[in-house]
Length: 124
Image 1 (spheres, rainbow, N blue to C red):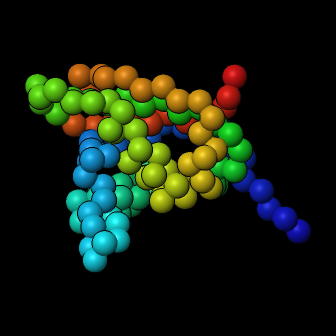
Image 2 (image 1 turned 90 degrees about the vertical axis):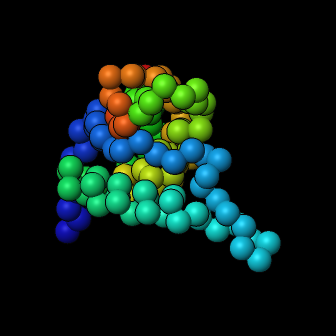
């Protein structure tokens, strides 16, 4: 007998501010490896996601909305925060693969300070 879990969308996940996409990879012996900062962030956020809720793995196309806080007044590129968030969803087994993100929007939300709200919803 197969047991299925009902998945109710939208899902909101709150995570701390991710490292920049420019700092995700380092080279060791001419091979790219995840930076220690990136590994640390992925592992901590994976634990945090699992504490926030239990969920089945999403295996169908979805829409993602990112609301990204600003930790300080420095100029930053919003697109550098997207990749680590999508990678996290796959790493934490929220999404089967980040190629299931068929629609995406991202915006700065200064009142969040140093966090990101990731909202996963059905495609419309």
